[in-house]
Length: 213
Image (tube, rainbow, N blue to C red):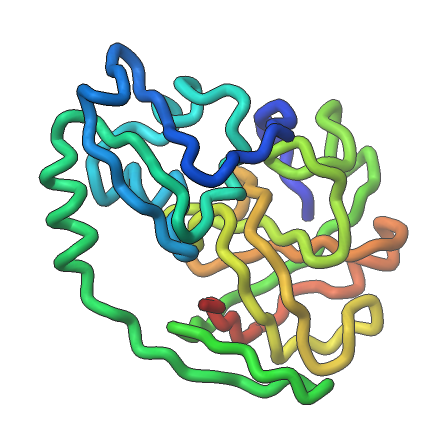
């Protein structure tokens, strides 16, 4: 059930520790430096600070939006005092853990009941954009399409409760790197390697999505 949607070009240049995000019309000294956490994303920061997501991304064309990591120094606009207040006041999310079928313990902050579908790399489903995700990365097992207002881009998740031979038995660790017009609200679309006919056998399934820490 792949969607036709404009995808961003590949942004392959990774951030270097201590690098800063330069926002339009601002120099480093005009903003406030914020030290990122592992859970931060462009989407999360844009919502918390009321900064348009596209403005942040357009201002940093060589930045990988999926590579904001703990310790990274980000330059925030002159309203940085708000940024510091938002981050300081943000309540800590309780940490819980789920054990995979392989015995691995995964820490998560929230679990959601989601309706899932699946899509393939077929041209019929991906149109002129080809078999790539929203950021231009090749589709692979572990790619999921989401509504980023519900599950932000870059979020790692653990999915359980499905019944399909094209996916790992017991559960799948995936990353939210794709989106589409049909994926709204509590919906995800799981990429599955294989033909379109094979993948269509997934149908609609209710799954559990664990938001990993």
